[in-house]
Image (cartoon, rainbow, N blue to C red; front, side, top):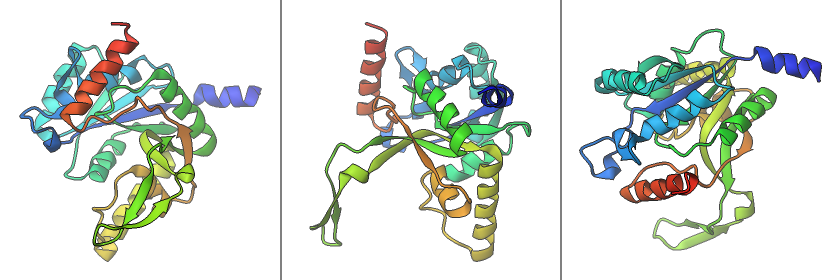
Length: 248
């Protein structure tokens, strides 16, 4: 037990928060990460959660080039002292993640990669991800699928009904040993350059570790309220969750 305690005391954890999306599905002139949610920008809800968490040492924010200064001002306004770097994102999610990872301090042991558009992340979920990653080296927050899932054929007829007892809906944070995720990303970029492969189907970091890493990815019990803001309806749902938490 003493050895485990010593290991946990010396570990350093950085959160990489992604806020580089365009939010085109919101049909709004304002990007979704900057939209007002109960008086606070969406991404600030996410950043404040990591700011408050005792396990998180540093935070890196990834945003579009034109929003770097805006994000800096917001970090100052909300006194986000753990925000150490603001990196420029790319035109695809994996490029934004890689940009953020490259600015992480070299003495970091683990990283938690989180969508800034998931503003309802709880302290308990961050704690679980930090605990699990120290054991398994690669893990993702996820919840069991509750809907019935069916596979369609090319003519939109039902081809198969999937056993949902084995299906999980993946969320963020996705947490990894820093050396492991950097090794996987470097291999990915080498593969893209060497084989001119198409990376457009990469939708999360676990996929990269699954294909380019040498470690299996473990699930972390997620939270059904940890929704991703994608549509205007999601904003309404998120506001309701926040008001419920605050007893309003």
